Length: 83
Image 1 (cartoon, helix red, strand yellow):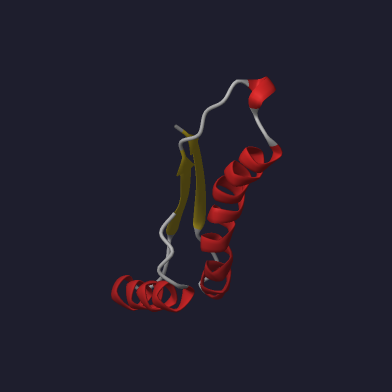
Image 2: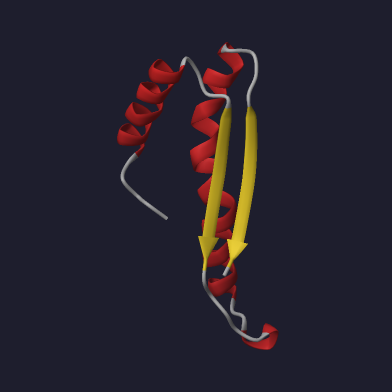
């Protein structure tokens, strides 16, 4: 996951909203490549996957709600991948 800071993300989305007059579609994508047989999957590995797949997309999605609410709509597509 890119970790370039929420402030720079907020600036990019604000610039996008100005340029294109809003935010119609947000693709919240997350992926991670881990692999282990089920009996060898540790809690730490499970949490690592969860943190990337679930929390990673949530942290990108949540700050966009106010803009979509203000413009009275938009679509969010969630894409998770365990490569």
